[in-house]
Image (cartoon, rainbow, N blue to C red; front, side, top):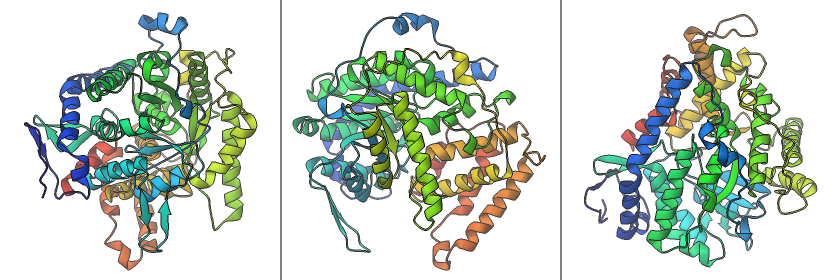
Length: 536
């Protein structure tokens, strides 16, 4: 299968070599990432165990507060290290998976930044992981190209491209294909390590640098671990400390109580914070899963204008600007609706209003999921943010306390909301199991974060026997009835040729596995990963 030379104590468990893996898994690169795993694995596992302890504390009825032991960090005056010139202006950022065509289109999209995503919009099949690393290496070298096999259209990089950020997987996800000393290595260290090893020096030579987005962190200690990884990695390759810059996604409810502390831990390497709004809602449901008073209304009603989300987003701005660093806005998940002009106009109006709120509040940039939204977001930020950023807008008027961050939004629970959650849940899981981590559903670009909200909300409604607007109680029987209806709709829409290419039955089974037990599964990608790696 492969002539790879593996370090002692390391095993590669893949069914076949992925194209290009010999250029990525060189002996030197393998030695580097295995070194990361051996040095930092114990602390990673300790921090994951700490998450379980905190969850038990929350399950006992406690609510998070700003840590008293870090009061001095919050109160004292300090700022992060100066930012490189090429990331001072980040007004529009586009995100997406690491396939070749996507990378070219995103870099050419007119956005200021492209976040190449190994996490929520990528299924970590072996071929996807290696292909992504090959594609990013080629993009940085300027040699990337792609010809569509169906249309024959050729794609290549434009003269001016977006600045590249990379999002590795979160601390919780394993890399089951590479076994180090008998255990799967960290997916985060695998993704980070290979990208950094192959590209850091080339990026610095080009006047840029190794820039990252860091997902799913729940505490300052998890940020401290990333900082220690950065220091070690830079020293190992002879790269100046501080060359790495990383933006942390504040996408867990617990991280919102430690924003200053997270910036402090990453001070030398910080590129600010981002409002990871979809995962944040998912985290809110998960962390307060056993609290019957914390049951949320329909997903569509939990918007950024609700008190707990608006409080969180404004606090991100205040904290970041006080520390002289960017506060990035959230994702616009809408996509252009080509066959319905009225629906398209309404969707684009929502995007514009959302971006106007962010720019007016003081965010220094925003996220979009589709190249078609870049001009809308850019027009708003060009109009409302004439300078490179608005870090000088300190937002001293913001006064957000712990209670503001946990206010339960008021709204209704409807059959339509339940149906949307189930349809999105099984639709996304089905695509993920086929190796597609980012999929358009119902005119929104869904990734793991939005699918997590959908399945978590169904679980929460069933767990606490929520009452729908029409008086019915959400229980297992109702969920299965709606799920069967949605599967019948899907079956009617499938062509005979497509039936064998899809796996909706497996997706539905996993969805029920996620929503029917009283114990909440922390991430849907964990059981889904076991399925795809057994079949990989």
